[in-house]
Each structure stands twice: as structure tokens, then as C-alpha cells.
Length: 265
Image (cartoon, rainbow, N blue to C red; front, side, top):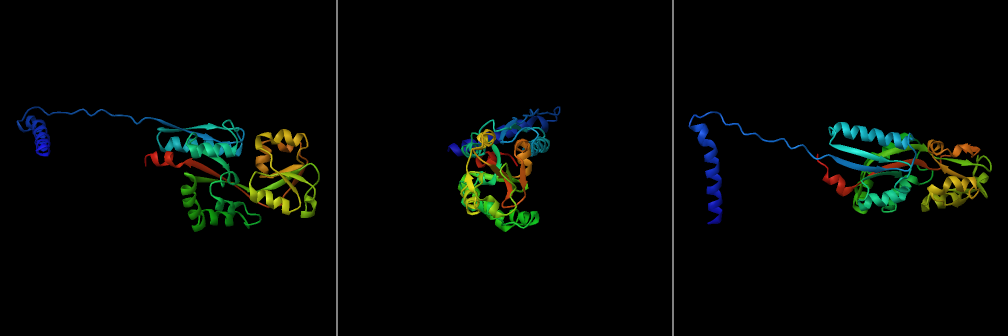
């Protein structure tokens, strides 16, 4: 009975709206107010200074998002580890207290260890080889499984190129030159084990403490992408640059999966 009453009510309302038109009265105009979508701001954190390659990439991303969403989505960028180091911002992204984070792949593999395949030593021949893996079937499978494991989605990749060694002790031209050298490496088991096997003493020092640690001699040098070292001005006091290409420098842009799914198409 209630269902029939509802149908009759709808029909009666529809008929009442049509009656003036059927009676030949003046045209009825119904004003439908335009409701402008609420603007959304997404927070994007990374660990390098303003005007670094990370920061330039993040700002370009923000420009494109604003352009393609007609200003409805804005990206607020927090450079220079303002929100914490790379592992911290990745964890914040997973928890949803940060929307987007950019970090070296070795700092986002803690939730899904197969991601460490991208930092296996000497695994890539060149950039073309890297891209064939990243954007081929293997890369697609890894990204899909990463969502399930971490509740975050990889939306883009950032390529540093070959990582190198910077030291004060001596130039590194062959594995034997690493003997007795204290090299700062990221806190990732693959990278720590690799340098220990090569004869160095791998030292895991937090990125935020690295500048002062190097100046105080707590490490003889570090490994990393050349441009990143220049952005951080480590080249001001590290004398030797050795190109050995142990690891390929990759970083990923992560977005919280709930945030991603809530975005309109």
C-alpha cells in the first residue's frame, strides 16, 4: 500500500509540473543552481631541498594536476623532509596522514620485499632495460601486488640514473679499493649486504643526520645518485667521485589508495 502511495505521489507531482505547459500558459523556466565542486588539496612530501630534481618534478606534477582538474585539485608540496625522512613520509602516506610521498624505492619496499628487485646490484644494463621492466608485465604485476600489500599505489616513477660513490678516503676504481672504507648506505638489507660483500663497511646513518656525520668523519663517504649528492651539497667536502653503477637510482611516487579511489574520474 505504501509503495502504491509513493508512486501516486510521484505521478501527481509530475502532472502538476506539466499542467501549466499543457494549458498553454507562459513558458515555465526552472532555475537549477550550479553547485561548484569543493576544491581539494592533496599534501605531497619529499626529502630534498627546493629547486632539487625531486622538487622540480613535484612542482611540475602539481601544475599538471591543477591544469587537468581545472583548479579543483591543488597539490601542496612539503620539501626538505619537513614532514620527516623518506621512510617516515611513506608510513604517513600509508596511514593516510599524508596523501602523496616521493622516496627512493629502497624506502618504500618495507611493505613488499619483491620491490627490492629494482635495487639488486648490477641487475640493469641501461635505462632502456630499466623502463622495459618498469612498464612491462613484471612492473605491472609488482605495482598491482604492492597496492594489496601496502594500501598505497605507485602512480609514477622518478629515475636518477646510476648510483655512484663519493668519498674522502680515496678514489674507488676496483672492489679492492673498498676494503676498510666506511660507506653510508640506506637502511635496506639488500644495499647493506651488497656493500659488505664488496669489502666495505656499510654504515646505516639516517639521511637527516648524514651531512654532519660526514663532516665529523663518522663515515668515509656514501653512495647515491650524483645529482642528489649535488642537491644536498655533499660535494662541497667529499673529494672523490667514483662511477661504479652498483645500483640504479629509482624513486617512486606513492598515493594513499583510499585517497586515490576517492578521486573523481
